[in-house]
Length: 396
Length: 150
Image (cartoon, rainbow over all chains, first blue to last red; front, side, top):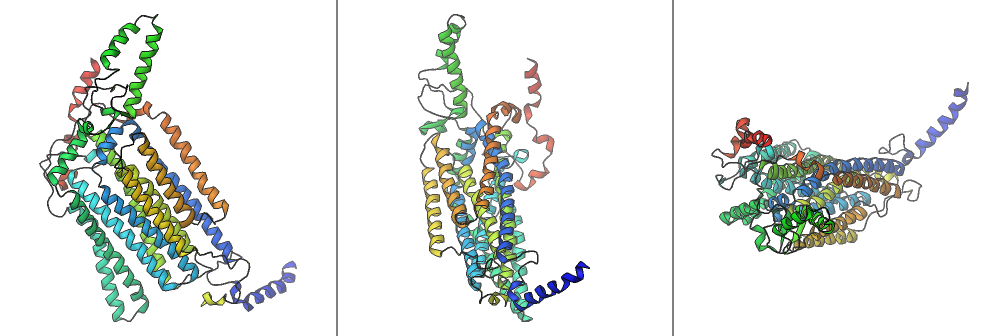
């Protein structure tokens, strides 16, 4: 009868718990002793998830590294097509959203409820601006035919797209529908005097409108770059052919280095090769081997002009504008930035969930875990963009 | 309501664990991140050869460290979380360095030697998906076997 013996004890502790209501606050799951334990457990789980995110993205960075190591000139040429201004603006927008997110975590801890809602809405708005700018970038490239290998069809003579890109309309449509739906919901909840729904709909309308602010921003900056359209396309063409492009640069990509008739030319090398045919000329043999190795190195890295390294594939014009070269670059570009954009979309989803809960005043200084965890996720998305931006946009 | 229930127990074990990061600190980190972004865009206009990628990655790593330490609270968090997070980078480093050591071995398997640029298109951008996949094939497909037999 051990159970009956222990019953009074249980009753006592149960009664004790009822006397002090804060022993089991509504937000504290029954299997946790304290809110701190609950918070730390959730946070540990979130960090483990972020580790899987890092490992997941490392596969993409690895593909990037391999293709770049093998084709440095492709990256230099194709990076010309990425608008640095748009990338930089998006970096700034994401950094600012990280600030508002970190600030929102603080507001949840200090129980500043309306400020928390406002900062979550600000974070969401930044995410929307980011996606708006991104959709301008994507639609512009798709118009030009800068697509993954199977669909890659860029050619300088392609007819120039005019007006608003159909791709842009497709990408903006879900957000436009969302915006219209939210406005309708707002007016419906106003007529039915649902204060809570109104308080949720109002910031979300602003958030969805910011997608179109992002589109406007992207259009202004993109047209600013393509103002001299003719010049721009000529420049792109030049970048893709890569020959002669390096003539005005101090450094040239090794793989496409124009033939430099300086010391260590192929002519000299062929003489060496003939001499090295004699088994006894070991010195010349090793010299030749060293020069060959230099050639291989030059094919991979970037070499200074006029240095002793001869261009390894002199006379061969490296065509970058092909499916297997520029096409693969854009394949990598779309997968990396696209998966990042999907993460932004997921972030928007969970941030809207937080916003609703924030309007409901679910969070307090003992229960701010969800805000903190979403914040961690949001910062990791920002972290990945911090690396993506220089790796894709800032190559020369 | 329950948010006020704990007001009378400010020092209970396991209940008072929130350490809000000061706003001034958040703003300082943001300013530092913005300055570093401007710096990395600015340095891209200079040609530093092989140091280019090293420098951009160095700046990006400083930015990432700032985000991790202050925005993600790792500077004052339980060290276990930091250990877990950093351990992922150990495996990333192993993965990428070991894969890159033989990246050149696979270079030719990854891309065909013969590849021609796309022809100018006469159709609109929306017709890309509708193109006959056969016509998308690289033309010198017939010349390639011939070259192999030589």
